[in-house]
Amino acid sequence: MAEQLRSRDGQQEKRQRFTKVELVEWLNEHNPDKVSSLFQEADHVRKFYMGGEVHIRGIIEFSNHCRKDCLYCGLRKSNDQLVRYRMGLEEIFQAAQEARRLDFRTVVLQSGEDPAYSVGDLCILVKRMKKELNLAITLGIGERSFEEYKKFKDAGADRYLLKFETSSPSLFKRLKPDSTYAERLRCLEWLKELGYQVGSGNIVGLPGQTSESLAEDILLFKALDLDMIGIGPFIPHPNTPLAGTPLGDLEQTLKVIALARMVTRNTHIPATTAVGTIDPAGRQKALQCGANVIMPNATPKEFRKHYQIYPNKICLDESPQNCRFCIEAMVTSLGRKIVSGFGDTLKHPHSGPLGDRKSHLPREDIFPIKIV
Ligand code: SAM
Ligand code: SF4
Ligand code: FES
Image: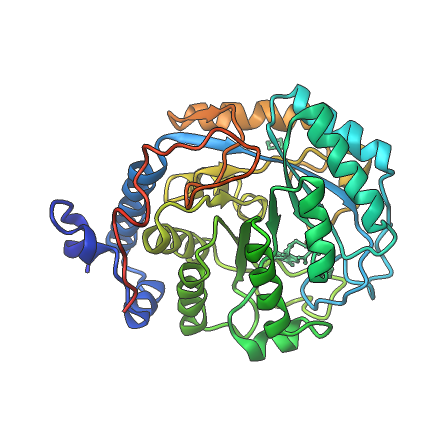
């Protein structure tokens, strides 16, 4: 397999076709030389399709209230140990303004599923951020109705993040009791239909997850033709029913990132905060095996310590400015460069208001891929 990966000339098609069996073999591969060859090849594929640039997105975690009870998450409604907060609409706007001042051109507004914010208020906020700050806006506020997604889109939201978490319907059912796998996928379909740039992703190392199931996650990334894929390790939270279960493995997470890059090629893939939480150099490692995006925390300092999805989250005592500078230094140390721009999808012609598409980069229709 490693030989096949190393051969670059004339092997493009072959290299990019992975059967489920091959993906499982890679996920079960522990030979350091072979794993290292996989990471190197994923890095080549990243360079070829995405270039050396790293896109940054500032995350504003504006509320940690949640009506759901996902077994893995520290924000689940049954966690009565968590200090809950909601940022006001003006506070969210100011956080976005600060992000813009720090040269972010994309912000991600993320929260638990918190019905306290009306759709109308969120739409006003989105419109104002577009008009006054000229930012690309990504929402990550969970499962909503088609009509609500449409209203956010009409207000100017460009992108939406909704991880499917696991492609195993039975595991999904056990870990997300208030939702169903079918509903989650339907939300992703609606988002696509509405013209959002759509991000999804998974958690690696969930209790009960197998290599087969992870291989199916990767094939689903491809089948959904995602614009962004977030891949992070499972980090058990002490105040959840999964307390005491094993931590997701760094190497396995990096392998999923590398394989997702090789299978989906021109997708934006972030080096996630979770990978930086389980290893101090986790984000650097992810950027060297397929990732091309980084999402520093742009939440004001007084709130971020309470957004404890999982324990020991990095950057809790830092300011948005510290994180911005830290990321600049990290990316430069890898010989890469942060690009100032919206960092739109490279996947398909985009008719939205954003204008920095890089049509010179190879696209799906130029290099057809088949998953067999
Ligand atoms: N509520 C929205 C949702 O669930 O889609 C967005 C916010 S939620 C906190 C963002 C992401 O956190 C989830 O998609 C999940 O992948 C991740 N997450 C939650 N708990 C986690 C844990 N213990 N370890 C790793 N990732 C976790
Ligand atoms: Fe709520 Fe999202 Fe956490 Fe589930 S993962 S409990 S929906 S914040
Ligand atoms: Fe926050 Fe490094 S990214 S301090």
